[in-house]
Image (tube, rainbow, N blue to C red; front, side, top):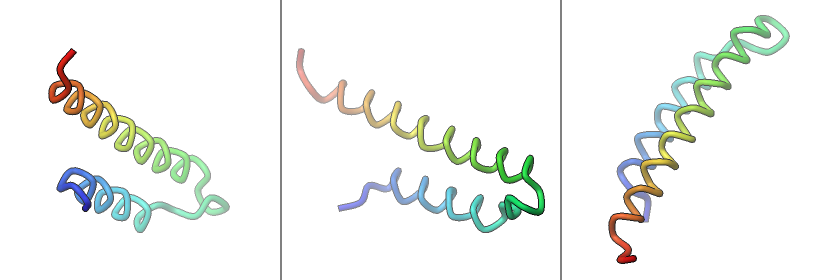
Length: 58
């Protein structure tokens, strides 16, 4: 089952991808869009790991 957070991040990534310029047209804009996607995914993973850590007793 997909989490709400996963669906939210997936929707944001799709939105960035749809607005992202082609690499051969605007290489810098394409790179910036890819960096935003990477940051979104990394941040989501950090929160997911923190959430798991709170649920698992040490």
